[in-house]
Length: 115
Ligand SMILES: [Zn+2]
Image: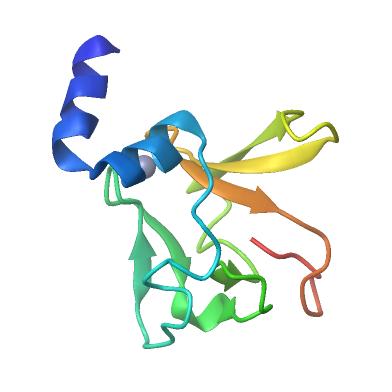
């Protein structure tokens, strides 16, 4: 695990490391993909696993990139997170365990999910 940490420290910026490896939160409205709607696939910044597609991207106005669903349920996993004081569902990369954010139940129909 130590050598993996070192590998990520070399590959990622300090901000990217803090968010993905230590479960940090990006400052709202600062992310480069917040208002980015070109077609494409969003890869895990740590391990390049395909995670989200532009087809499922929308803008909730909350300051972070929003997706209706992941590209595949196999590419992500969920982890109960109580760090905010209430139960939230943390979304992680299923391959490398990178923190991707949380999933909420206030997204658009038909699934009403917001990743
Ligand atoms: Zn990953």
